[in-house]
Length: 234
Ligand code: ATP
Image 1: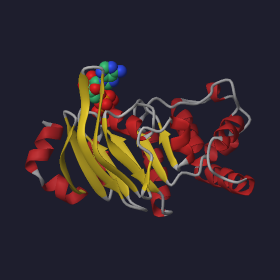
Image 2: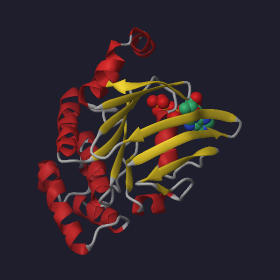
Image 3: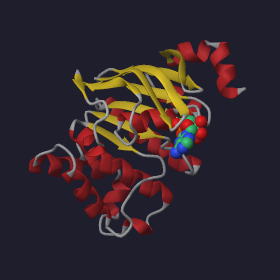
């Protein structure tokens, strides 16, 4: 479904990711884990069109989307839930969701059905549909950011550190939602600094260190590698 080949990107003279190869097959949940500054966010942002690659390619369902602008990437079926819960604070929950749907791929009927599905997945959002996003808690804003991405009807969902800054009880709820989506057939690439959490939910794991993929395998395989575990956990 999503294939990244020899992708490199950087900031001016600084190289942040180098020759990254990864694949997310349809219906799988793949985690990209690594320590602070390893290049996880740069990888996701480059896939999502927020950052230009210096070389390499990104394809979705065999279609080249390398270097496309972010709005075109969304229309091609790739949605990013960026780090730091991007929502529009002066709009209500419902307006946030409806607005996001327009940048996506769904027809009017599909958008209506997806809204019902988002409210089913996140009942808190349904309860608060007429409240301003600014008035939501951090966890609720993360759920709204998630809901906004789903409203674009993505083929592939990119999640950047969904657990960041949230209380453990909220993280649990969020990860239950991620697992629910996964069971329903969603294709997900998850970036997490909390490797333990990522290993628990994912089918496959890539480990990135200093901009390069250093290990790839099932969660069990990665967990079983002493080298990888010491790189991740010290
Ligand atoms: P984190 O978990 O801290 O977000 P990460 O694995 O997502 O880390 P990136 O944010 O992709 O890592 O950063 C990869 C490298 O690129 C780091 O060395 C970082 O310092 C550098 N970098 C990231 N953003 C910029 C920027 N805007 N300008 C210059 N260098 C940057």
